[in-house]
Image 1 (cartoon, rainbow, N blue to C red):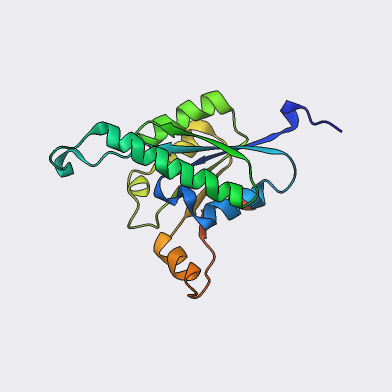
Image 2: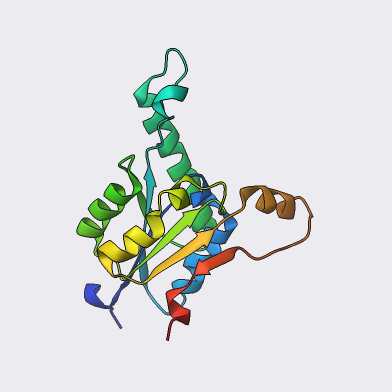
Length: 170
């Protein structure tokens, strides 16, 4: 039985350092469980703030770093049994999201950030602004990479914090 392209689910993941986390891979795998799913991972560019740029800073280094993060994320998703594609996005996560939504037409969005207090995206209210702009089911994962490293080294296992899950909305 063949599946039409329209029947495929489309999940858009936007994340920076957290893109390659176990939490993101597990969340995408769980959401893709119901059938054939296309996954697009967007890794926005993350230049250092203008006042914190070191001497000799090269903007191309930011693109190289974003591509490296993206490759690690795609490998983590592949290891979780998922086939995903990826792209580097604009430095503004909302612009990167807008552009990816326009091309990919997702059914849902996963935004992965660092936990509150450590996330620039949360400080900029990116998750709520994305929801307001696009009205798509949007899951926000707060991923503690330090905790994940600890867990992988035999520490106590804690699930990621899903701050907002559209599947639980009435």
